[in-house]
Amino acid sequence: MSSQTLKDARQYEEKIGKAVPETDRPLFHLSSYSGWMNDPNGFSYYKGEYHLFYQYFPYDNRWGPMHWAHATTKDFLNWKYQPAALAPDTRPDADGCFSGSAIELDDGSHLLFYTGVNVTDKYQVYVQQQCVAIKDKDGEEYVKYEGNPVLTSKDLPEGYSRYDFRDPKIFRQKDGLFAAVMCACKDKDGRIAYYTSKDGFDWQFKGILAENNGRFGTIWECPDFFELDGKHVLICSPMNMRKTRTKYNSGNGTMCLIGEFDEENTKLIEEVDQPIDGGIDFYAPTTMLTPDGRRVMVAWMQNWETIVYGSKDQFPWFGMMTTPRELHVIDNHLCQTPVRELNNLRRNKVEYKDISVSDWMSLEGVNGRIIDMTVNVRPHETEDYKHFELRFAQGEDMFVSVRYRRSDGFVTVDRRYSGIRNAVINQRKMKVKDTDGFIKLRVILDRFSAEVFINDGEQVISTTFYTPQSANGISFSSDGVAVMDVEKYDLSFD
Ligand code: FRU
Image (cartoon, rainbow, N blue to C red; front, side, top):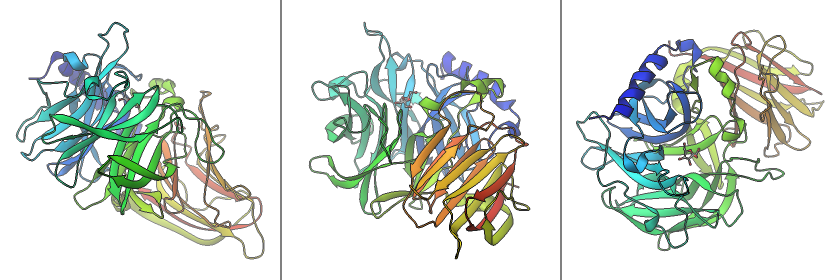
């Protein structure tokens, strides 16, 4: 039996979400059905489909008491909205069902592991506890466990905060036990707590997997931990980052630590750290393992620091997810490429080879707002170039640009001229590997966003923009002579 709060949310989303014309949404990026979306949650494979839930407030384009929305897909691109899965309607989650994860149990049921928050304590601050909800093999609804919460601050070591204890990510260890990593905090500093369980309900504290010690922001939200290509990877979203020269931006960032897992001591032996996406809109990435063995990541293609609430006037939804991305660790570096299923949407190939670029130019047939385009740039044999720039979503006086500057190896994404009226962060820079003027940019556009995969996914920058769809031009320039090959496809399900 679902509660009135959940019924209300479902009724509301059905009314609002259903009425949104398809062309008012991205084609293949999951956008909020109605109202607000933040973190992806419960990314999992269950009963022949991929499931993705998300932080959801259906009633407004702003964050509010968190529900879990629900969508399913067979190919990571063609999403089907399902009725909202969780609402804040029990005592431990009376003020919100915060982020979490999902897994299939041995009996064929689907378990959601999430953070319940309530402000019942005297300080009126969110107390955070971990809860579970379960859908039976043949059930229709995610039913909250009567024994919730299954983890409280009593399950943390001495001195840990009860207000920053959230975002459990469940997975299976090699020995078959369930394990979960979650955000924890001591002395206002981020820690990753590690728990194990035989059944997903009864959890035991194992240890602290990693400690920030003031290095990367403060609290590490939404952790994920997995083995990939022989290494162990911890992903998290640190709050309050400090800008560094070449790696990190200020505000809410994302990061991965790559190293070895010392299982006996439940410690990640760190080797390298890396930002995950250097663009404007990216936060709270989370992963799943597909049945064919791929580690696929999806993130909120938005960031707390760059929210443009104004879009409510345009659409009754706010927030979208990135294209799901396949991950690899190559030479201790996390690489990302769009899921291979995206290739099935490619239509109308347009190809150019050895085009010399100096002054602004465009190419016949190279335009559009739902495209997959790869631009391979190199210096001219006899002349050189210092900057290469690519503009898209280009109309009369509007465009979004990606610039590569050889002198310092920075790629800049710039949406100042996308028609945006908000003075939020509209430019971001990311340093790329020195490749002597050779750079490969794969640009995925889907009406309101761009994801640029640099040098086969060594680095990625993602941004949203709400430029009118009629602005669909693409142009290129360099200040010397660069040579490029361009391969462009429209993306479509038809
Ligand atoms: C990250 C986050 C999570 C929390 C959720 C609340 O974006 O702050 O830590 O669970 O959002 O919506």
